[in-house]
Length: 169
Image (cartoon, rainbow, N blue to C red):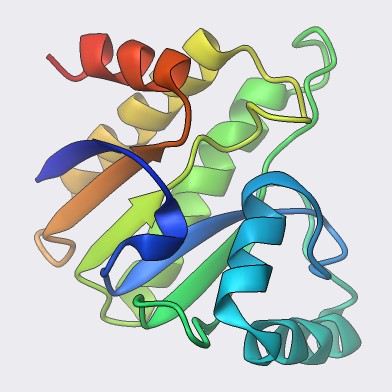
């Protein structure tokens, strides 16, 4: 049920890919920029509508849009925390980002979902801590439902891939 891939999340054909977004939902660097660029303007247009309705997306929360020109059907945008020495509930907020993405997937009958390594890029979350939170949160959630059939952790870099590979053995 849980798989691991090294590669580009924008190329994965699943029901939904998760975007490590920022609170503005207007695109940015890293995986966020790559998803917006590969998916085309339809994603940004839906993000702007969401922004106009609710003023963006708070840390730990998630919203869903079309996937535009991506091979996925949807993009679930979630905002992970910026690492601040672990003293500002970063671990709980990161867990919530995964959890709220999975809940949104359930609500939209999504059976397959691919996650990037949320918060481990420019947000500076330690990769080993983030991987433990991601795998534990997803594993725990999957014990509560049989509706999500496939979860893929997509690692862009070798370091994250090795960390996840050890955790998922």
